[in-house]
Image (cartoon, rainbow, N blue to C red):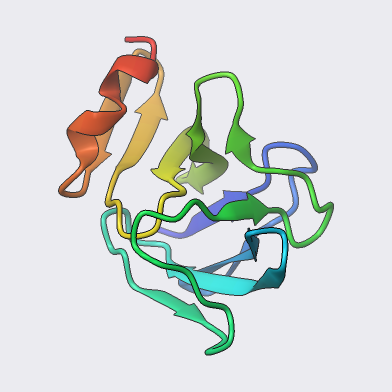
Length: 128
């Protein structure tokens, strides 16, 4: 089954094959593209060597097409929000924007799935 990811603002596709591509900004100085696996719970990141961040540092994520901030402002500013399209159905995916924090959530209807070693950290913000 094909999985696609979209910007919640402009609805543009954010993935190329099995990689999600997002624009990132660290400390308002360093900017670059980051590539993530489309597999929920896989925290491997590919980036340019000169885009540096430390564990615990907040990274800003933006749509590479419309440049909208992808922070989940309605839930928690430490979470990023994208749309996942799978089998013709859409759901919301949230993940932590704190470097080294492994917390990802797939929200569909009144249910959620949580992934990563830090998954319990933001459950109270999901509204369930």
